[in-house]
Length: 148
Image (cartoon, rainbow, N blue to C red; front, top):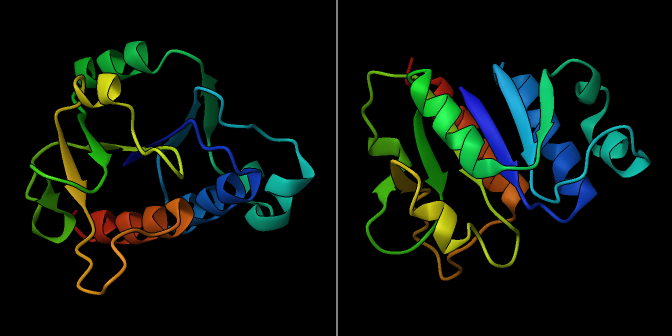
């Protein structure tokens, strides 16, 4: 599994995503758009050393990255809420997944969504219908790591 953290503004969230990526043995973490990169104390505070263990790369152009990963056989999905999304716990796939995480407030931009193979969401039966991006990332990585 590959994770693409796109336009994540909080360095603490970036650090938490690193930590979850380490826990769930993510193949690679791409930091795209304006997502911050190590070394930074805010990332280190929540990553707890994971920023040194997880293979990562800074990529400015998410569109080229999506095409590259697709050409390498990845199914590129966005983790998002809304219509026309598949619940993550009901996904069935025969190819490796590259999962795009979007901005904490605005989500994944529509022009990026258009380039994805689809969207998936974490079912949320409670009143609140959104999670912190790093929390959602951890849940998604857990579910997808069990689908092997």
